[in-house]
Image (cartoon, rainbow, N blue to C red; front, side, top):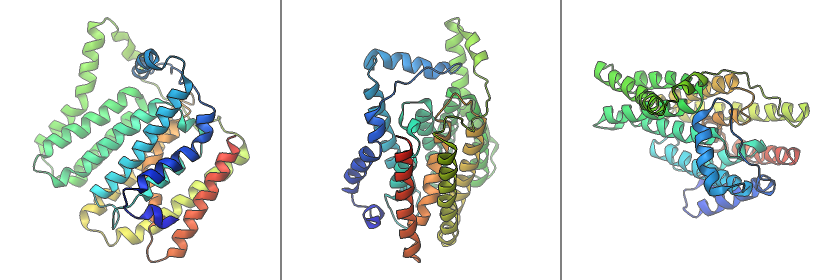
Length: 327
C-alpha cells in the first residue's frame, strides 16, 4: 500500500481524494460553522462575505475546508517535486499532510489558519526559487508580499519575517537593492490596508491587530489523548529527522539549503503556534506543512524498507487512534 503513494502516478490523486474523504468523514458528519475571532478583522470580513453565499450551511464550510486541505496537500507535493526535495517525485507528502490534518477535528473546520498556510506555502515555494531565476527581485518581492499578507490575518505571523531574512541569506548573495525590494514587498500590504482603513474612517481597527496569547491548548479531548498524540508526533518527527540526515547527505548544496530553510520554517511555526491566543483552536495547524515534508523522509527511506513500512503502518494506527478519540 505504501508503494501506491510513493509513485508519481496521476491516478494516485484520485486515491488520495478518496482517502481524504474517509479520514475526514467525522468532520463532514458533524460540520461546524466558523465563528468570528476577536480582533482578527481581516478574517471576520472574509466570513461576512462568505456568509452571503453559504448562509448557515455548516456542511458547505466544512466541505470547503476539506477541499482546501486536499489542494494544499497536492501543492505540498508540487513544492517537493519542483525543488527536488526528495530523490524522485512522490505523493508521500500529500499522504502525510492528510493524515496529520486529521488527528485533531478542529483542523478540518474553516479557519484563518487555512488561509495563512496557503500564503506561507506560496512564500516558501517562491523563496526556494531564488537561486533558479534570472529575475530574483520579482520573486523576492512576491515572497515578502505573501509573508506580509499572512501577518495581516494574525499578528504572531510577523515572526515569519525571520524566515524571509534566512531565505535572503541562504539563497542570495548580499545585494542592497534586493534587500530593499524585500522590505518594500513586506511593507506594501500594510501600506495599502492602512490607506483603505483611513479612507473608510476605520483606522482604529489597526490597534486591535497586535495580540499575543499562549495556545498550549486546553481544547483537548483528554489528558490521555494529548499524551498519546504528543508521543506519536514525536516518534514520527524523530523518524523523519533520522531519515532526512541520510537522504539530504546525498543532495546538492541548493537542496541542502532548502532543507535548512524548511527546518527553520518548522521552528518559527512552532513558536508562532505557542504564542497564538488559545481562542484560535487551529493554531497548531500552521506547523503541519513543514512537519509533513520532514516526516515524509521516513516513508521514503530506500535503504531500510522495513523501517519505512513500520512508520507507514504506525502512522495509520496513530491516525485511527486519533479519529476514534475525536468521536
